[in-house]
Amino acid sequence: MLDGNERDELLATLGWWVEAGVDTLVDAAPRDWRTPPPRTAAREIPASAPEPELVLRTGAASPANVTATTIAELRHAVEVFEGCPLRTGNVSTVFADGNPEADLMLIGEAPGAQEDRVGLPFVGPAGQLLDRMLSAIGRNRTSAYITNVTFWRPSGNRTPTPAEVETTMPFVRRHIALVRPKAIVALGACAARALTGDVTGIMRLRGQWRTLAVEGADYPLMPTLHPAFLLRQPDAKRLAWADLLAVKAKLDAD
Ligand code: URA
Image 1 (spheres, protein in one colour):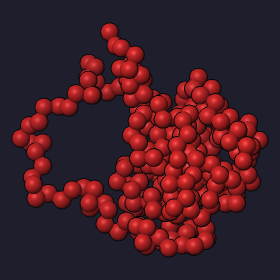
Image 2: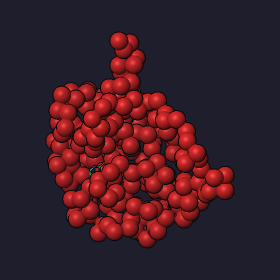
Image 3: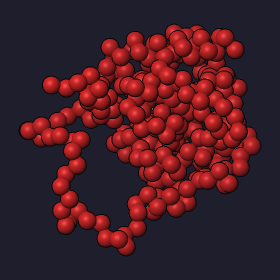
């Protein structure tokens, strides 16, 4: 029998897998994924092997080399950036959409196939739901600014790895510093983790204001559920609705 915490943890883990697009069980028998497999000689990594993360970090943006002072300069810097392995094989660099002067900034995970084709974030089914969510709090793309923590579509729409996201975060932080929104909404677990550094499941992170410090300024950040997750789990829309009402209240109060 599970206690309340274990149940919450399992639900958060399941929610995370569903959000990551895992919807098929591949083993006939259940497996306890929380217990690490026994180490065998074949799994040992030789001490001399380079760390995969260090390889990926080569060529990454750093606060020192993201010097853009306007949105246009930042867009250009992202477009010519070669340090993120995700950019290979994609049609577009998907930078942002909406109004960079808006007081509300929404940050998602990564472009999907339609975003890659069109070159704008959140234009597919999840984006259409996001537009409806914005409209429910009296906003649209002229009164909100939308971007992602990565600018290229991961193959097969998988979730970007932490190492991939790490290469683009200096751009994301500069992006925030240039827009200077009154509130930021992190859409989904990947964006919430990238921005807060907190690996707690999104079901626990959502709905709680955080303070995000970027280049000497503090921004209120609300993690919420990703619209793609809400398309698969419509029952969870009431949670996202509560989060958006909290965002609206904060923006209306200022
Ligand atoms: N999902 C995201 O996180 N971002 C997009 O731009 C589209 C789908």
